[in-house]
Structures are given as structure tokens and as C-alpha cells.
Image (cartoon, rainbow, N blue to C red):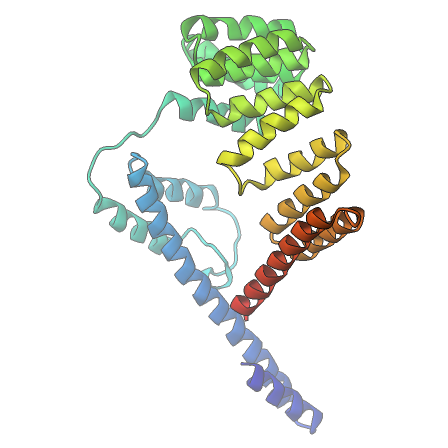
Amino acid sequence: MMAAMLAGIVMAAAGAGDAGIAAIAGSQAAAIQEQARFSRQNEAEADRIGILNLEKAGYDPRNMPTMFERLARQYRYDAKPPEFLMSHPVTESRIADTRNRAEQAKPGGKEDSLTYQLMRSRVVLIYEETPGMAAKRFRAQMAENPKNDAARYGLALAQTKAGQLNEARETLKPLLDKAPDNITYNLAAINLDITNNRFPDAQQRVNRMLDLYPDDYPLNQAKVDILLKQSKAPEALKGLETLLKSRPDDPDIWNQVADTRGLSGNTIGSHQARAEYFALMGDFKQAIQQLEFAKRRANNNFQLASRIDARQQEIIAQERAVKEMMN
């Protein structure tokens, strides 16, 4: 394709203007079509893997084509370009293909759960224009069904976000009374206490929940947040280092470790943690630079500087390997 485009440029330069321009345009169109074809292959593979993952997770994979049908209905009357010009169109052929694949799975599987509905309420809150609009939606759902726990949970979150803390506490109370050890409800209560600057209450609740669920990531993260809110950076750092043992490849934790080490006065360690964050994000240039900053500050400590240099060389090698793979 590059050769065809180059030939078109040569033709145009040699005087065959229209023919040269036509050759250039044709080669560009062919390149776009080939890219779209490759994208379709990846898309079909992603759909297939998605169906397998749904089945392994215990969900009914037949809901994937149903979701695609809903998306297609959203754009039924909208003007849109032809399918071959779209990167990820929801087409009849894609719906039919996923339905055929999904029908090969065993029937059954869960289609819904309280946990899903609770997480859905969190997402709804994120995408509403204001917490007040979200609260209005959740109140309407509760009016239709007073036993709708997901709507009550969403309302409590919306009230917390809107600063209506007393109302949020009253809204959340029936859920906690019904399920006092539910992690999701308790995390909402912890967030409410943090927002209300009731740190001892939040600390007491998170400690009780960690006694029940010591390895739960959101609870451990909440504990760190409470400590940081109280300017207890060294204690928060211990919690983050514990999290790193189970989630060493989580860039968010490394980013928070970098901030917390900085608050603790450990500038070298902050640069090292920031380097790990950038490396995990694929920004090797920034990672190498952060380690260079750390190495300069550690020039009086031979052993530490050597360890930093060794890690820097590992990231350089990793960057080289990625570039070779891409080529």
C-alpha cells in the first residue's frame, strides 16, 4: 500500500496529475479498508472471549447479543456512515454471530444479582448530571418498589455526594440493619463518616470489617484513606505496602505509594514508586527519568544507587523488548 501511494506521488510529480491523485486516493482507501477488516477480526475474537468469560463467571452469555440489540435500537433512527467505515458497528451480522456462539453454551446461569444492582446504582450516580438528579431517579424507583435495596443504596450515595449527610445516614440505616456485615453497605457508611470528618467512627467500622474480611481490597484501601485523611502517612504507608504484596502490578497503588512516601519525607522512595507506576502504564521514558532522579539523590549510598541502577536497566530492557515486539 505504501508502494502504491509512492507510485501515485511519482506519477503526480511526473505530470500525470489526475492519475497520480487517483492512485494516492485509492491506496489510502485500501489501507482504511484493510485496517477495518483487521479490526473486525479482533472484534469477533473479543466477542468470543467475552462469551467464554461470561460463562466462566456464571452468567448467561445469551445476554451479550441482547445487549447488542439494545445498542442497535439506540441508533436505529440516527444517521450513520456505512458499516465498512465504522470501527465497531453493532450490526445484524455481529448480533447473529454472538447469538449463535452464545446458544452453544449450557442454558442457565445467573442473569442478575443484588451486587450487580448495587454497582449499577454507583455507575448511574457517576453519569447523572448532578447528585440531585440521581437522587430524584432513585426516589422514583423506591416509590415504585419500597423494598428496592439498590435504589436505597444509590440514594444514600447521592445524598452523601450532595452533602446531605444526615439524610444519607437515615437512608443507609435500614440496609445496615438488614445486612450489618455487607461490605458494600459498610463501605458506603465509611465514606459517609469520612465525608463528615468522623474519622474514629470510620476507623472503628473498617477495623471491624477487616476482622471479618482481612483480604478485601476496598476495605484495606479505605483504611489507608482514613489514615491519610488524619495525616498519618507512615501508618498509611504500611497499609499500602501490605496491599502491594497481593497486588504488585496495580499502578494505582504504586501512584499512591509515591504520594505517601513523599508525605513521609522519603523522596528517593517516592521517585522509585513513581517509576513503577509509569512502567506499569507503559510510559518507560518517564519511569527511567524517575529512577534517574532517585539515583542522583542516592549517590552517597552505593548499595541503594546500585539497586536503583539495576532496576533502571531492567526497565530500559523492557522498553527495548516492547519496541521490538511492536516492530
